[in-house]
Image 1 (tube, rainbow, N blue to C red):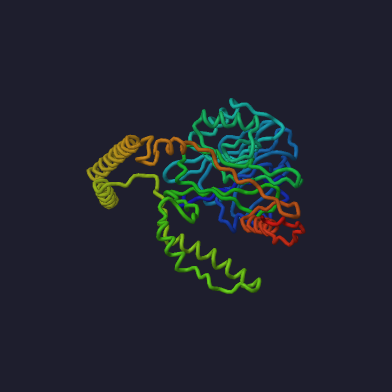
Image 2 (image 1 turned 90 degrees about the horizontal axis):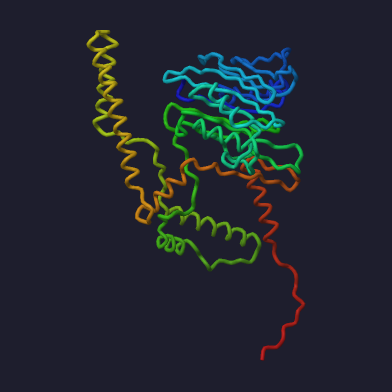
Length: 418
């Protein structure tokens, strides 16, 4: 496997009609594995993507509905795993071989007409393997993975996820956009993973396929992905006295406000002055990577192990191989001990008072915290705003309509003040 592998999950709602457009998306975004649900394939269906191999599972009634498939790059070493072909659910799975370990990647489609119990989900998860990424249209809603409401199927799926010690990973944004504008978009497409740390995963939506389902792209990295912090204007560490002095130096009150253009210019300048002053007096928030800061002893052992490996590659002598194995075993023990010590020290320092900013409650809150939902926004013409630019314009229009000048003249005669 390369340093990263890009996986896309998408409900095609009939894959044959989207073949050319999907080929372009796969090439442009350099997708390695594409998990497709609701393919509408039958035994007579045939499709091909340049540079990819495709595997699929059809509906058991050989009807042009449901179905799942996986499109994988030719140069990725893989083999087909389990196929589940039931009336209510169809699953296609591949075993992707990497240098470190094998990962089963599965595409799943769950029909909205059937309510599946937690026991069935558990059985499916166990059949897929011990380390996997499942993506698809689950047609199950729960606020835990960012849906706006909870359904019976979503409640049962969450039970199975917790029982199998899996994780639900989503963008928190709607993935299903009904053609009927009276219906509210919601999140029903997401990933379920097991034995893969979220530190190595990054997920984002993709709006290039303008259909009723939004593709979601998961990037799996060999190293920890440092996710960007959300932009903030101020924080707990803002120097408010410095902010006051900076803003006083910037603001000039002796300016003419005789025309509408001058007023707009000064308002824009005032906003920029506030932003710049806040940024200058707020230290940058540096996200701390989840992991161990390895001490000098372990780093020296790793360096020694590299030299031992190079020597064994050159000599192929038994004693050099033995030394390499001993160093590998010693490093594993040292890292394991360091990890245990780090966790123990972290737990000892947790308190429920202000001395550590209530670290105990913050840590408890962050454990398996539900994904925050991003609700959809409707445009003035009744359509849904999908990307950030459309949402920003909609907010601007809304605020412009609210903050209108009061042009009505009061005709009320005030009484004389005695």
